[in-house]
Image (cartoon, rainbow, N blue to C red; front, side, top):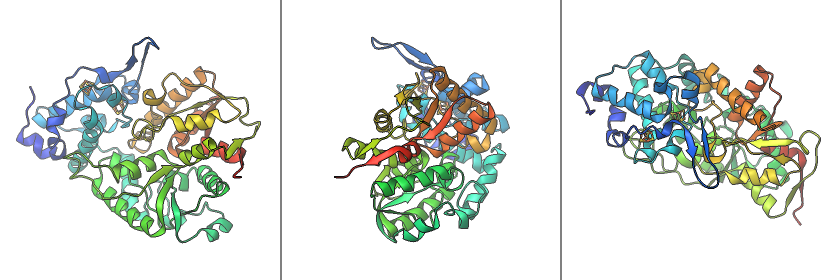
Length: 418
Ligand code: SF4
Ligand code: SF4
């Protein structure tokens, strides 16, 4: 039996507020792997990137972290670098949550983030990489140690001058597309223009706050969220993103009612509609306004799709990217771990910046899974997943092309709006 101790509550006040939910974990270990038995298929697979990398059960699934947190709250375990490393090594992919069948299910990721807020308060064992980019966000509003004044440098001058002050949509570019995957940001604005979408870009966009939220830095996250809510509201009525992480932040973190305990950490009042570019494209394809021509880079090649955790498991967008790919002259092939069973790319939860070797090795394993079904191309609708997959493919010289679906669509679409 675990019970709260004065020492534990003092060190972990935020997790203590969620203790009733934490107590619902029965240690059944369901969360330690994917499996499904039925007439349709029998399937069992690795689900937790952290357990898979560290090869030690205390890193595997939410059961292990729930147990650790109960130990910390009871005062029987002390917070040290190793305990902090276990708490920070979760990518927050939600694969364990998918498997859980008790009442802790909907709370698992909130509890993990609250635990990180408590570790941050105690200043013990926060990975150095996370500390570095975290200090930069309040100054330059991005985690890439880049200048805020250069955020929009990727936009061609001719397009920048033609962007209206106010439009129906604000394209929220996000930090990864602004500073690292400019190819995806450029493809997005070209595609939106071809589709005649009335959009603009906010000059003073800040980081959506996802890296801060996922690593338990709620005060900083709130500052950036409130800024974005204020500036976006002056320039548009709806938001388009091309980043799964930004989509999740804006659509879920900024908007949805948080549970008790977490509410004290982060809550904003925001109700603007948020849409991902793939949804805009999917609608146009289904209306018959867009078809795709053959291009030797992709035509008749075996193409698979990776469900980014932030847009898949966290927000339930699974079919639209697949429907767009099926409308293209490619051979669409599915990895065994797909949709809610997707295996994380390894970038999220602060892992890419905090534990880069583990992060890249996880992306490499996902690339291997794609190669295992003879895919020649890996696609996603997230610049952060794209970045991890393409960096891993380069590092291990893997025979796999990496593309965002928006890039392929932009290069091959034929628009007919008769
Ligand atoms: S988190 Fe859920 S699935 Fe995992 S051990 Fe606890 S109750 Fe079981
Ligand atoms: S959220 Fe993902 S990385 Fe974290 S414990 Fe669950 S399965 Fe493992």
